[in-house]
Amino acid sequence: MLSLLSANAQKKKQIDIKRIEPAFWWTGLQQKEIQLLVYGTEISGANVEINYPGVVISKIEQVENPNYQFIYLKLDENVKPGVVTINFKEGKLKKTIPFELKSRSKTTYKGFNASDAIYLITPDRFANGNTANDSIKSLYQGVNRNKPFSRHGGDIQGIINQLDYIQNLGMTALWINPLTENNQPEFSYHGYAITDFYKVDARFGSNEDFKKLTDLCHQRNMKMIIDLVFNHCGNEHWFIKDLPEKNWIHQFDTFTQSNYRLATTADPHASQFDKEKMEKGWFDRHMPDLNQENPRLATYLIQNTIWWIEYLGLDGIRVDTHPYPEKNFMSRWTKTIMDQYPDFNIVGEVWEEHVLLTSYYQTNATNTDGYQGYLPSITDFPLCFAINTGLMQNDGWAEGMAKIYYALAQDFAYTQPNNNVIFLDNHDITRFATNMKGDIAKQKIGFALLATLRGIPQVYYGMEIGMLGSGDNHGTLRADFPGGWKEDKRNAFAQTGRTQEENELVNYLSKVFTWRKNANAIHNGKLMHFVPENGTYVYFRYTDTESVMVVTNNTTQEKTLALDRFKERVSGYQLGKEVVSEKTFNLNQSITIPANTTYIIELKK
Ligand code: CA
Image (cartoon, rainbow, N blue to C red):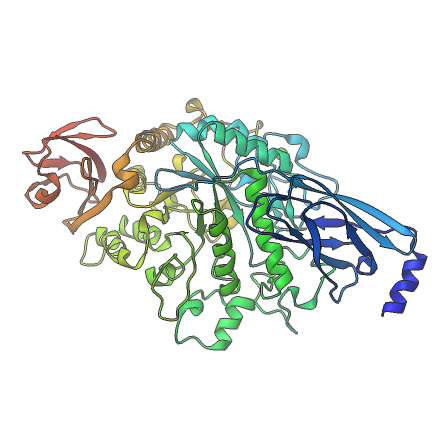
């Protein structure tokens, strides 16, 4: 092998280095050793030297594929920013690569929290701000808006153009489905089949454009949450096409798909067979399953996260398919990030109907198997399903509003339920308006609950205009926002381009969420709820000095509620003012609430 390599080296005209990842780094981080993945034709035979004060090569690793070399740089505590020159030598051949150590532009990071409201965007489908990037020669798929699974041309500039619209809805943070390159021949629009972990897809823009969008958000006091994927990548990823090591991914004799049973990760009775299928099976044919037990890949993924946090100055992370990668790796990844950024926030996608199978991952959860996930926030699917189902049911012991009541009664299992991300729908599940059968009154109830329950609300783009879409058909679920393309027949970003019903929804949502921006009792208050009665449900969000009473009537009849039952939260307050209608209530009297309505009532002394 070695003699063959040196023979080839003699034939080489130059040292070929295609990539070094990461391409640059920062001083002043906790990680004192950086792993550089060097990729190039038979690069493993090259000698490497550096000469920079405070930086030494601590280790070099060759792997089974000679086109890779892993170089580890050790940084002194006080190393100065600057350019480290890395010299590669092979016989008489030389190649020099500059590796910059930047100084950090931001050293304190405060994550998103319950004072925020997150707007979730599928970037290909939101707004096309730059038609010049719709089709890129070097990338497989171009634009075809007639095909639901093709690319439609939305991009970062489109989001930048709509920041006023988003902010006027009362939103304070963006979560955008992955913007990283998905150079796949099919289904590249969704973003979860990444082909370059360090590069924004040119059809969305550039890394600099992502940075510009993040900076513009920060100038508006809005936050940026990046969507990261550790479980899989696209089969057109450059390192999948020339694997550094066979065990970089999980490989099988025949195609083996995940069983998608997240429960196996926590289930004390799960078989090894089911656990392995869940964790190691592929998410899809075109998404190879990454093996995070390979130490080089594990480090690669951890560094990639730190790189994006530092490069963009992020405020948080949404982790895709959180229970699917090897769970001890996820625990290590999360702890590493939270140790570096203690005030940061990370929400893991745990798409699970059951509270206990969700709370398992949250930091400090008491798990009998001893698992510690370190995850500050989880996606609250159990609450989402409870709201979607409950609002369409008549009242019963466990039906109707009792669905929501029981979902919240299980909050004892969460170590920090006010840090759960709550939502009515997202890019994977049937849209809320579809589940509400287009009923405007029901949708407004949902918006009010989303704005006032504990947790961090997330709104999927288009929910505010009642966009429809089924989880069985992702192409239409992620339909184009009307007006995002200049050839569109109407512009729903503007009041004049919306129907009367759409305006009713937008006005309601923006009024409630704009009020929410300064509603301390919602951000930090406790939750107390009362057993649902006759299709009505009452809860309070309160601190020592503030109280908000939320009354929902989920029936088709007007209801009158005597306030005696709520004395422990109402006493001491005289008046109430409803946030949307601005109607006032005398708290010595009963409250009458119309059919299919939620009142958000701020109590006044
Ligand atoms: Ca475009």
